[in-house]
Length: 322
Image 1: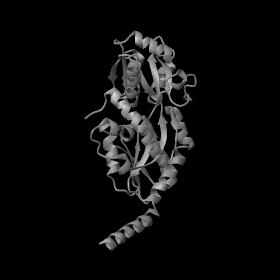
Image 2: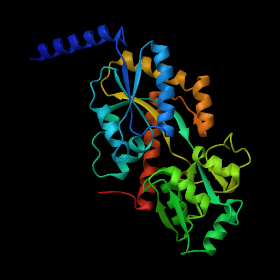
Image 3: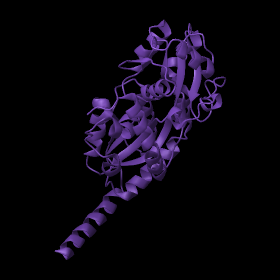
Image 4: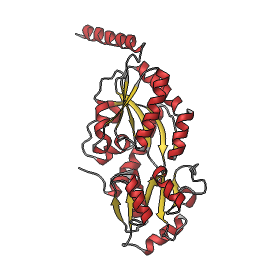
């Protein structure tokens, strides 16, 4: 029995090495757990374009939406581990789902092989132009004066922006009410119109309103000032140095677990190089992202390190869904 098992394992290993040598010999499907036209989709298509050029093969982008990104992610987790189905995902189904939901239909560490954190998505705290504040000290003073009468917006319950804003609200006892939106475009529009006075958003949808003067950026939840907003100090610079007020949102490239090691190693190499390519750097800049291009090992370390902080944020926000 043991001999048969060993022989089977040896045959499978040899077959894997044999067919991975000419990989890829057919089109690759890049699953995106978000709808067309958004930041995740834009980056995924740029990634697929570069990957196709390098591998000399067609890369087909397949948008599989639903359940906060979990439907598309589950599809990849259950796909054949042959390197022909990959995942390009935003942070929610990878980093946040396990803390947000009692039942997640996959386990990131066992069902997926994350190849690289491609880029970091930074949040900025923004206020409507009529809010009389220009820095975090003034913001907290203003919020405390209006305690119990103010609200803040986000792109949805459990989003990175909601969790960070909820932490600020609770830790400074501001007594504000959360107003969730279904996406960032209507949130940005209502913020500019003064329907909600402030919130945490990302640069791309906020930038037109910032440039028009309808929205004012107060702080960046980043390690360094954003290139597109060099005059806006970080939270840390303004005395808000808690890890909960640092953006924890990354775009990642992943494959099903048990994909042959030679393919994983090659795809990790390609992903890291593409993340530093001129095309992707231009995309990152336009969307206000920081290039990362880390290794699979870097992801595992970051995944474990940020887990307790995200769990705390979810608990404070009340966003967990049983």
